[in-house]
Amino acid sequence: MAKVEIDVRGQTCPVPLVECRKALRKASPGDEVVVMGTHPASKKEIPMACQAMGLEVLDIEEKDNEWKIRIKR
Image 1 (cartoon, rainbow, N blue to C red):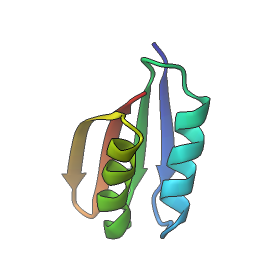
Image 2: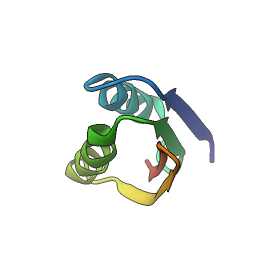
Image 3: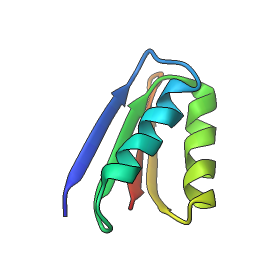
Image 4: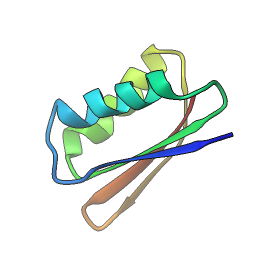
């Protein structure tokens, strides 16, 4: 199982979601994609998009003004 990290801190919509989708397309089934960002709207959009794609959101962590979303491909 590979772990792919995407750092979109400081980026605003639609960049975090676009980068997340790109990484998920490249990832193999079973891989974990971790998205780190700061944009509040993306923190809501990314999990919704993942659920729409039938993927599992493992965890959403928030600390200071940053968040980290773990997704299983």
